[in-house]
Length: 405
Image (cartoon, rainbow, N blue to C red; front, side, top):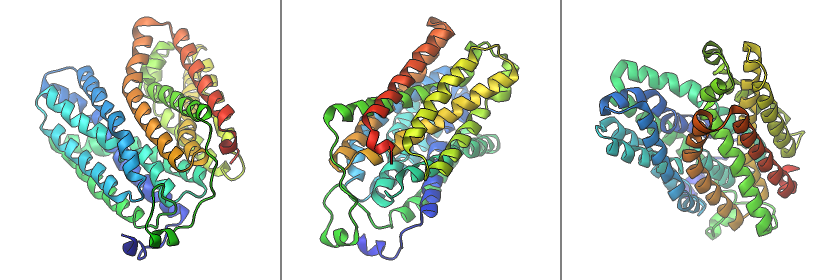
């Protein structure tokens, strides 16, 4: 493997970000966004409601959390090619199973495979690639990759829709699986041909000689370690759950249906805008500014949603919520890279992937239940805002050195 690496010089920052970003687009677009396009046809074929399909999907995603720690350790042995190809293959097979599903149990198997594949294909895997092959200027690298990731729905939704219309749901799933395997595989092969800059497991003497060491970062005390993990996971869970329930959130805020339809796309635009500004300012401002800005925008968006909902007010709220979500994604990806080293980084990555993926399956259902059945909108807003503030405060207080980087 090391001899093969010598044939490929390290990618520039721009090249690395672009290739990992394209890999993320096809992986997110297939394993996360495909179900939103094909769920009506799947529901009709299986004779169940769309809600049932989404519940089966959420249950399957739990397998991400089950396998994530082992997947993280596998990648961090120093060679991401085999784990990455395993993830792509499992993702492609999940699409094949879903294309043949004629019973909810078969669909569950397909979504469970997809959930497991996510641990070796999506953002958590991307941050491991950064750690192994391009750890320098980590914050800007993470920001650039998330910029590409924000385009996943904009690119893959139309592709999935076109496949569905032209070939039907069955061949549509197979087409998405093929795209992920071919495009994702090509990206992965190029990335993993780069030398390992720093592996968190022993390398061969030849590999060690060719891999310059990063500065040693002192281990963070256990209390601070878990405070950072809890803080990052909390803001990630709430942000992801709100993104999925955005139409329901706006309806609970008394927005008119026509207004909701008009402004939903602004969430993605807000993500792109926030991440673009962060990318441009990464060399001047520390990650601390990103955390504070993200929390402030989240609170402002909640405040706006309590105003009378005109088109302008709702649009501003959605833009700010999207920008906040995009910035918090950067914080979640960059903070562990800057704060943890060696075994602590592996432990942090495994814990965040596991806890976050389980919560990602459950949190959207919890928030939807709060918005629809239990709590007044103001109560739900207060709960989410408090969670975001607590999470941001935990990160700010316990990851000071990393946030100044």
